[in-house]
Image 1 (tube, helix red, strand yellow):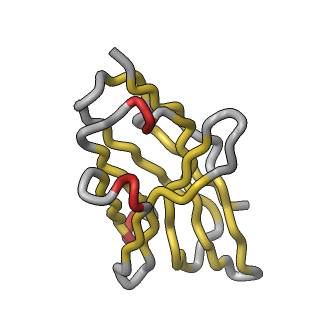
Image 2: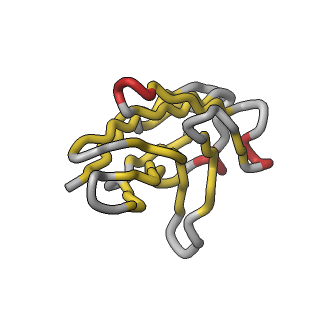
Length: 119
């Protein structure tokens, strides 16, 4: 019904940059909150950054000043610009969205994209 597809992950050296993208498709009436989470094996999934439809932002302390979340409401997309990457940023990154369809409200997750920070 509603899908999120992430792209942009990969291997990058410490200090480098990556830009993740996430596109929502399907029967979408509106999207309120969009966010990026990450997860490493053996640990809980954690919030990286979130943005509401009104532009309110929230960042994990560990990424403040290095990561920037943004969105394109017209295209139902959210982005995560990641700079000054560290090995500790290595994780699978998941896109998340609070979607309103003509019939119901949904919380939707993408399939995840792997980010590896290593020399």
